Amino acid sequence: MDKFNRSVGRALEILELLAHSPNELTITEISKYLDIPKSTAFDIIYTLVDKGYLEVADDRLKSFRLGVKLFQVGSGYRDKKPFYDVAKAALEKITAQVNETSFLAIESGGMLVYLDKAESESSVRTSCKLGSNRPMYCTGLGKALLSSYSDERLLDIVRRTGGMPKITPTTITTEEHLLREMNEARRRGYAIDDREHNMDVFCVAAPIYDSRNEPLAAISVACLSSKMLGNPQRINELGTLVSEAALSISHRIGFRGDRLYNVS
Image (cartoon, rainbow, N blue to C red; front, top):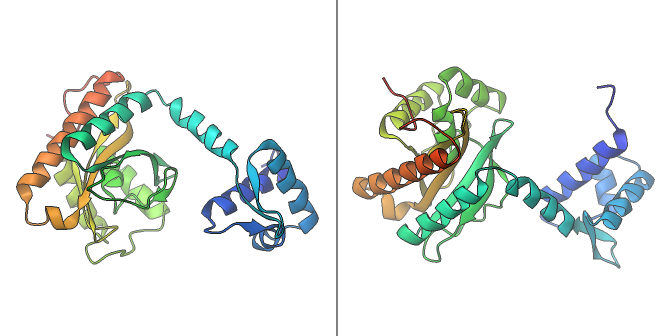
């Protein structure tokens, strides 16, 4: 790419490295991980500190962490999404109604990205961070979005993002099984994650559509799997609730359909 700016690219790599690191990092560590000269790393890091995108975590060690400016910029992106306020209100209403944790997510680059959540004190307390990525084929939110796509599009996403490795004993690992699940989700009106990414968590989820009738995002309710297994009535109650909420959000942002899936 002729217009690629190396310094900007390295600055973004530093931010991404620190975003995914469990610990603060020193200039030496950042230089080593990214294979860039220490002098270059020094200049970029202190520019980012000056602008508020990084903070000095330890003056003695000269270690660094993400700064509050990143949160402000990220919040600006989220808040400019036309559906965000409507979806946030829906999450809070769902959580208050069923006393379970609810989530909002979008797809980006074939991965699921969490935008918001409303947590219940007595339900799933997840370590999932807003802005973090998850595979789509083994999460309720991801499967809700995949089921809103054509079979060709969903298989393309699965294939170019690393296939379908087994994460738990109940993870779906074949395209044939996934397609069957997607057809079932379309028929019932919501997708299910039966402990496919986390053995302690069971999710129901449904897609949100925009004014062009295109899938835009998804919402879910996550429960402790121990409360859901062997309880099809509860699964259907929560699934119907999520499906109705997703359709209501969609209508409020311009969707003209009367159902989430057109199933012949």
